[in-house]
Amino acid sequence: MRPRTPPVDCELCHGAGGRLLWQNDLCRVVAVDEPGIPGFLRVIVKRHVREMTDLAETDRNRLMAVVFAVEAHVRQSLEPDKMNLASLGNLTPHLHWHVIPRWGDDRHFPGPVWAPARHDAPVPATRAAAAARMAAGLPAALAALGA
Ligand SMILES: [Zn+2]
Image (cartoon, rainbow, N blue to C red; front, side, top):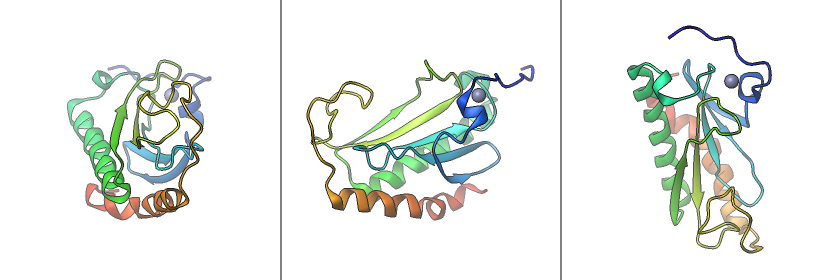
């Protein structure tokens, strides 16, 4: 794999992509802080790679270990109706995973969060507060993965 110069217009090379919660040498976990979707996190590879298969197998496995640990922490903390894991990158082709807790009463359910809202549902205050606690507790939950 040849080293690549980060594209000048890649927002994930030149910005955090959200509020930084945790990072190691390979990737970072950020809170998206999207109104209406409490607990929406992203796991973003630090260097500019486009696809999972651009990573060496060891890094693929390390990345997915982080994604699964984040998913487990979000599930345990928020008890959503469903978890959505997605790696799209069509608009921002810099490898990242979305980790999204979903509730039957969220604005986009049962569509993906990127689909137009189907109804106007306020986020319960208890859910927003739990999402803030979940984000605060993420570093401890990921400590076993190593910094
Ligand atoms: Zn990039």
